[in-house]
Amino acid sequence: MEIVELDIKLPYERRGEILSKICSKVKGKIKDIHFLPPTQRGVSEIKMELRVEDAQRLLAELRKIVKGGKISFKVFTEA
Image (tube, rainbow, N blue to C red):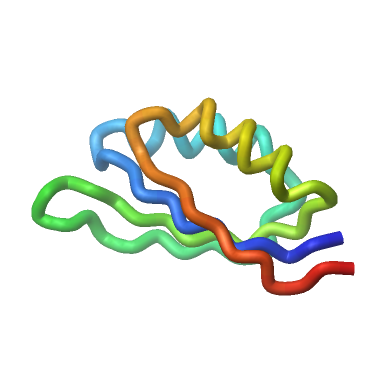
């Protein structure tokens, strides 16, 4: 079991559409989530802490969902 922090940057207009897909994918694994206000360029930032089994596989699936945005991640603990 790993605790992973995802930093997702999305266009503000598509934030709801993309977040609903992400939340359906990681349902029950979210430990903490923070929504930051959009920048002047219209980019919204979301920070999520997740408890997952295979972080690399989850990241590959999420990159397919977030095509117009950017995802970075950090692994906090590995078991």
